[in-house]
Figure (tube, rainbow, N blue to C red):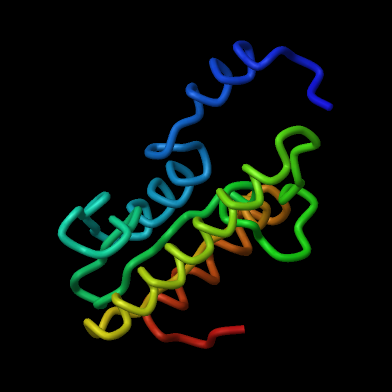
Length: 140
């Protein structure tokens, strides 16, 4: 059961950003400081990737663990109320993500995903690994 009424929850949920989130801004700032140049939210590509690095033919999605159901993550909780609606919503998100990744790969893009919890746990380590993944260097 939710601890707030449905009108309050609706207002809270409508305030959640889909672009320029804190995790996304962290990734952008780090990559820019490292000399990477990118385009943002390119609507011409499936799924409008958060970052597009044409030079490397790489797209990056910065996923929130809750919305994109990061497997095994403590942030990918299941809401207690309206569970059927949430199950359908999350399933739709997963299917859409898989469809977008497949379409991008068919187009020849390398798709990288950075999870919100990775940036909370060990941000510098994850960002350094991302930079190596972009340039094909030693990937852990």
